[in-house]
Image (cartoon, rainbow, N blue to C red; front, side):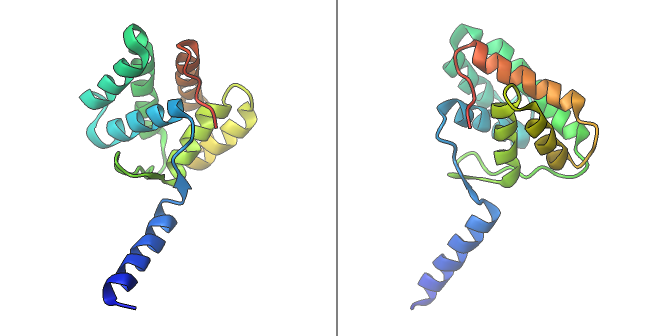
Length: 150
């Protein structure tokens, strides 16, 4: 085995450790993930996140955009630690990103599960405000015909 092959194997193994989850099969979840990654990395006013939501939702983009911004602000303000996000081009997800998408997918059908996931993600007990923001984002996506599914 060459040094290049050893290095490539190590990199692949470490990538699957840091990014253990594949991208979701749901296109709407991938749209939400992209917006979360862009806003998490570049701020709430990121133009590419806004453009992606505009492209996906057309004239109804404002509600999902504003609510996604509110969710991201609530997450940042409420978390006891850091929430790991991957770069936008990454074809895998961090555990935190997978948890966020699971919360969005389950908030209406399994709210107790969503609450536990949010509690684990934020590292705090009182998550009602952030959970409400997540429910609003999920409802905005669903109301525009793009429900986030797991």
